Image 1 (cartoon, rainbow, N blue to C red):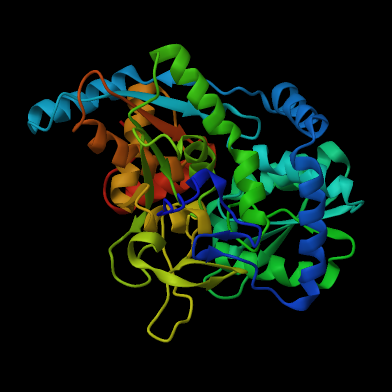
Image 2: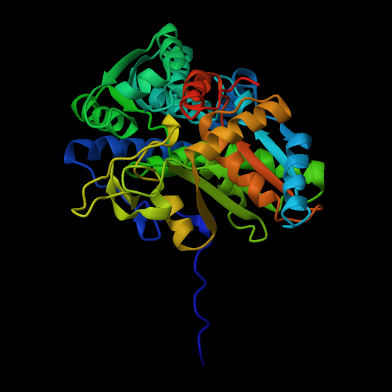
Length: 422
């Protein structure tokens, strides 16, 4: 008598109890943080199946954050993709929809996670939160959650990102947060994360670190994904109502990967839905000129977990570049690394110039100015939609609004000789 081979677990079943997403994940941290991670895991385990916790969070997301966000038919962007399809004889062109996370309070998806983690902070009896931020949206969302719950908030931000994101720096300060500029390394997100981790090691008794993406040691990638999965849960229900079926493709930008994990995760077991992640291709594929960790990186440990990381020949974390501060990171979440190796999500890179063109295109076709991070997803989605059939549907996760980026985008457009002015 032969025994049928055991079926591998569904991708939605990860992480395992050790915090592993297949070969990736785990917790590679100094002993000083072990107790804090255990405390966080215990608190999260206690609320994960507690309907009272989720009802309270759902109420906050509804009344304070403004959820559900809309699923919007981008008709003029669809016509643009269909024209490309006709001109290049690619296909008929799918209908394009936008999941409008830019309409959430503070202007991006980041608030979904910070409200949930602030609730965990309160349950642990801690009075101070710290955060890292690149584009500033997670910093603003952390400062907002801190103000709402009466917590002290310090946000670490690279000096280069402070320059690029002056508006969000001002917003954080107005909300009562202290913004701590980081002048080491490339002065961007990686360096801000390094300093936040150092702070946490020294203040763990009274401080909770609200990591802003699906990165870091277990249980952070799981917690952030769970809080952000409201995006995909809503999107799935909205598509069934509006289309009578699931979408054929879902596209999202990927830096650390929180917005993409949030919209992909509820679809990950739906094999007929193509999931497409878009990384920062920067100026070129040369080392230091991009931030395409999944396309060009290799497995390594960064900020407490094993995932795909951009490294030099000696295994040191590489310098990276992107016009978008939120994608300017040399690693990616371990769950994305698993999805890549499982061939469940396909990952692609979009250059700075392509993202800038898409930034203007969405603004001028739909009256929506996207974050530069989102513009990467838009650029790839247009090309992909053009290859699909007319009766197919593609959803772009519009992860954030572009108020924060208009000055930097205009500066970059002027440098290449094409102003943002009509």
